[in-house]
Image 1 (cartoon, rainbow over the protein chains, first blue to last red):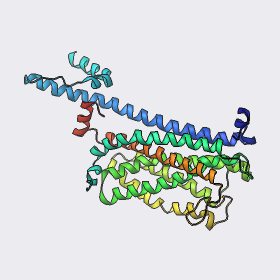
Image 2: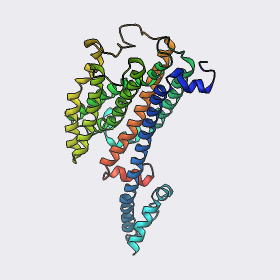
Image 3: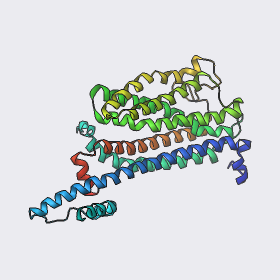
Image 4: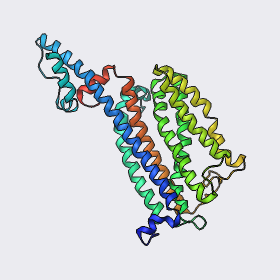
Length: 95
Length: 247
């Protein structure tokens, strides 16, 4: 074991600021990249929620008008992921 | 048994395959990172010349290697996309650039923090440091150019030209420590000679290198999936996946 105490570990033999300055900035960069990617994906999926929900509604409307609406198109996942956007569209179409 | 590789050149099938690969590489990256940090801080002894400051090596060298390696991979994909007009190749190049730029920045940042206590200066305009800085500008140039062009296919082509021209910088970075006088030390690890480091330090460094690889693969696959979705938003397969809740 290299370190006899935590303070010795943080001091890094007097080079603490350089060593931890490197590690902390690396950590921040990596975490930010992961968060930015997740946010980009979430934003994208949300915007698609609108596009494809309206698409799905369009199809179900057609099926209903043709009397062949056997199964609802929206399944559980679908509702959970884009609940708000579906609501918005429904409100728009009903009003 | 022949695998039909062309199948995976289609964004639609690659999207699903990549999605399955991301968690695998992410878990490997976390495991290797924990092991690498443990070796780096608790197993490897202090250096007889540099004391504890040398522990920066466990991120500096992986970051510097990844910055160069990712650039070459990016230029290859961009070149393939330009030559064969394959959409997925160009999307891969676009997905690699931000991660490559991040590693380039980290190589410069950690190098600077290492240079201050060892050389007495944060920065010096010598061949190794300057060429690595140019690499960062090449990544930024690639990303800005692509962001400035609305049509994705034209952006791919323009970016590919920058990426391919910039490849000349990679051997310059690599050999700069031999070609010019520089403060930067020579290669610690090379193909032709035995490594000049203690083996436990080398082990820790290599584990961190593999962790960076796995991290890069996971992040780049995750990003390329987003790029595929952005570009193929009107394709039927996207609607189909969306309906199944498998997006």
